[in-house]
Image 1 (cartoon, rainbow, N blue to C red):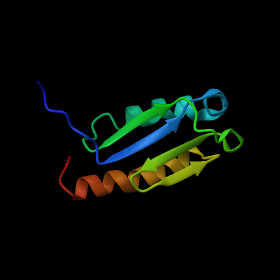
Image 2 (cartoon, rainbow, N blue to C red):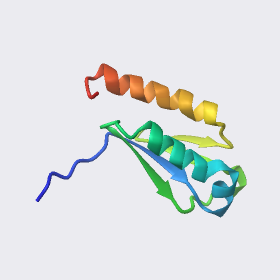
Image 3 (spheres, rainbow, N blue to C red):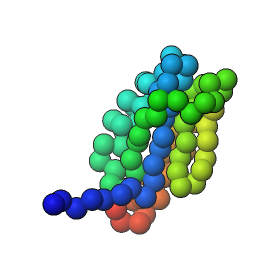
Image 4 (cartoon, rainbow, N blue to C red):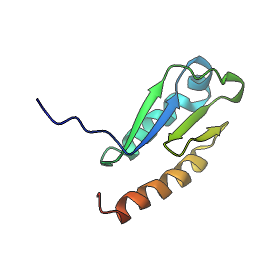
Length: 92
């Protein structure tokens, strides 16, 4: 059996009906593309987080940082901090 690795950071992106229509699906694709070489950060889509009135929403774990009604710029700024942390720890 192969090694089962677990990421240190996970970004959960809601792609349910409201979030998906308000940019969640596009954000999921963008983050997957942006992080395709990251070894410690994984992007996972979720169907619904029951926070539809704040759509779109996503969550950074284990920091428990929730973003609502986010812009691409906000997400990428926060993500850049995570990637810099990963690189400074020698995971690149």
